[in-house]
Length: 64
Image 1 (cartoon, rainbow, N blue to C red):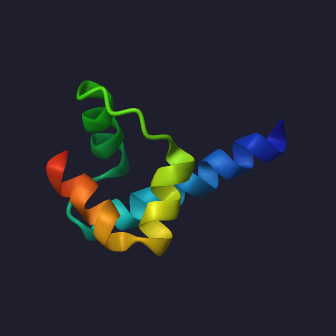
Image 2: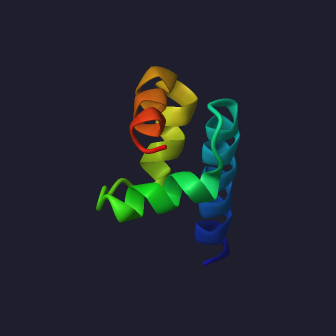
């Protein structure tokens, strides 16, 4: 259980750091995705932020 919590927190930190570099916050990004019914989980978002920044940037720009 703690392992799940730790990984979720790590993903949140990665997403938040990448989002801040693009001019938004973690909470605003997640809120925007939920409002538009975009179901992409934190694990995938964190991976995109880390390894595929151009795709992550597109997601952020479309959901600002």
